[in-house]
Length: 160
Image 1 (spheres, rainbow, N blue to C red):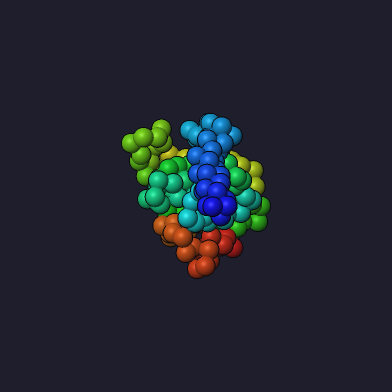
Image 2 (cartoon, rainbow, N blue to C red; image 1 turned 60 degrees about the vertical axis):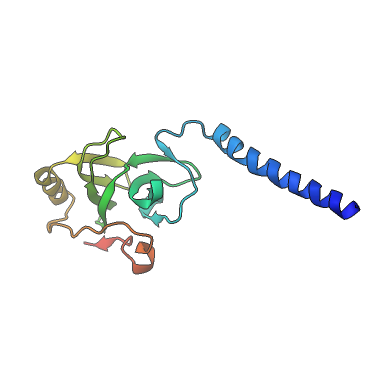
């Protein structure tokens, strides 16, 4: 009888924790729009604390500042990317797809990691011009983000 009471007590504590934990997470981060939650299956670490993180099952990938709750900078449809290291800074370049639910234009982007400067929604011509100004003279071969990028080294900067 005593073991049964202990078991009921343990189960009730477990159930209460399962109910309260999501509520506590929501109270701590009610500003979900424009942020990501730290519950994801993989993350691609980029220079200066930026990350590519899957949201909504991994089909949609956003570029965000790292942290327990980070600010989405580009998203949610980062289709392809490449990381470069120039003399002066690390640069992430890539392509953003159109999203029905987010206010994001499709087009190319450039993120200068060291200064946090962001160019997004660029046409191919604008993108190539800006790449030249940062010392990238050859059109980049972009890579679709996956959970294996860190193992394969796709997130490491290409030195120019």
